[in-house]
Length: 615
View 1 (cartoon, rainbow, N blue to C red):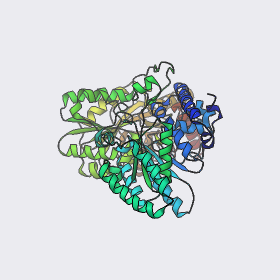
View 2: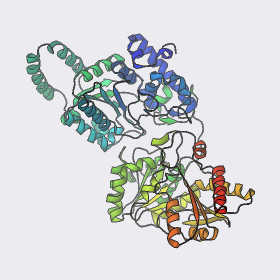
View 3: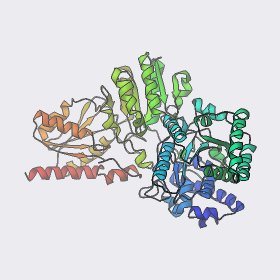
């Protein structure tokens, strides 16, 4: 690691010789494997982007120039060589480095990232700002071919071409997102090949004739017409972008040459770079989907730590069982077959399974079309990703009350991926969707029962929200809308999903202090009808809700409003995640920070009792 230890900025990269750069690439790969094997994180994508990252830092100065990473999970090398190497053992840990670009960490990070397909539009906006404010910096968007399956990427491409703003779009094409890429975009990219000598000729041509403007202008027009006739026409050039590529994404010299050519063109340019996900590490290159996002593992052998059963697995198994009985049931994913537990369904029912790529809005609209024509679609999607399909939830599904089931995975705090991935807004927006039923299982048994209810016994749209990971220790089966888990007389505690475990533990703490808490679990949080909760609040006069969601639109506000309209005299307190900007870290620590752990819930309950006593 002799060279890596001396690298702290783009300027340090620019001083290296070709041989030193090659050695640095090898050192970076070793450092990535050693670090990620301890902290977990995104491995294969970062191994594939090592040379591309070094080439970008050779050509650009990230303290001034703006490099916008799409998704951002491939930015580890960028972080390491911009002064954060010594803190890399804190990656994705509470209080440590984020696994995604974060401007608050470093001025080298141009823009926050975490979701896909937005980078080109962001880069166009930055380029326009540069021009209007008469500033001097270059703008680059780095987008993977997986993110190019999202419609937002094409809106950005169209805007870039129309703007004529000088900027570079780097398409990192490794034929994968998390699962192998699907659809027309993947086939289009596989067919795009330009003769290797064309880029070298183009650079020579520019260097020779730029000093003769009249000759350059005449020959340039002639050259472009010849290129159109002799070389393959592709979508990007047809849109008005100057297309360069494909380029070997692991050849530093070639990458640097093409990136300089693109930068100096002073127009919108798309550079098509071919990389191998997991490059340089045998086990990651052989199984890039497994090593996309991993927990701690054996750095030498790649052996992964065993994972326990999780809600996603339970969902996938249950859906397969339901599909055996219901031939109209179909499953949809947005590039997350494995992550949502649908890999088994895809293998057993390939004709009834659809992966739309990173296109959550398209998946929602497709599900609406399926439902309208008589199928029973189930769309499995992460909570924070479903945000991208909100318009379709209302316009395409709800207005016609179509029976579409949304399996909302990663609801609540997701831990190490942080604020871009926490599923803490879905309760707020799903409750605004007309006719939407929202189920909240607290155990695998409840997930099985609620999924069957949503698929087989429900009309109109339905959502089942469940967390990342496994069960919390709640073992009973109470799939009904309201369930009384513990009788009490001093105050009413209400929760749903796995937060019920913290509330039950809090009730135990209160009992040790001589306080009798009534505990009610909500199995369904849609509608305006919670008679058991209202009856309890009328008896105790105190309502405390605990929710792993943002404050706006939380169930606590609904219950308090209902009690007030009923004319009940009561005091209430709502524990939740406030405005919803929650950093990365372990779930237990994040619950403590937001007063949602059992001890904090019990302490707030005692404070609420004291406040009433002082009246």
